[in-house]
Length: 212
Image 1: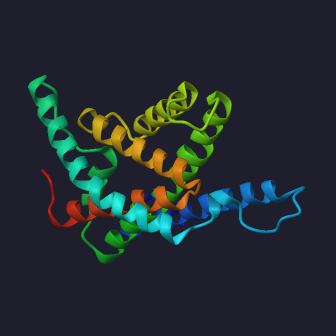
Image 2 (image 1 turned 90 degrees about the vertical axis):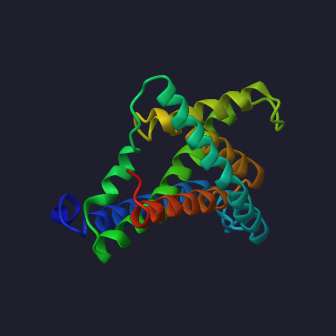
């Protein structure tokens, strides 16, 4: 397995599967902790998937995508005007390593399944959830503590995606939408769906319409 992760066409698939299994283990662990001392034996609200919320998330993604594209183009233009270098996101640069079916399927598993689940668990459920619990004084978005929690979680989400100046604004917008989706639905699955669709689109564009 170590060799598969470090080299070869199966490397993205092996990384994606390990990431997915690790995240599922963390989710199971958190769920077990929450169920301890509770008489209820049903899934916690953040793990429940409501069809209506998922439909709203899908519609939101359709509305969000053109805005993200426009935001990206504006960011690229701004960086160029300031004399900066236009580079791809570090994770996207790795996509061009091979064109084999195993390589491509591995990147879809990693980018469209494992990464959205891991990042929404970490940045929305855990990070934003903890920060909002500490800082927020109410449920309104006008609450300064809740806004501070959104800003801090969003900043760390953007920072985790590497030094990518042209992507700062689109990633910040994506973070706001994902956090709002989680806060409104109180479930991890709507932001996971939006994130997965977004990443799948990015991977598809890169594989079939390579951006130089």
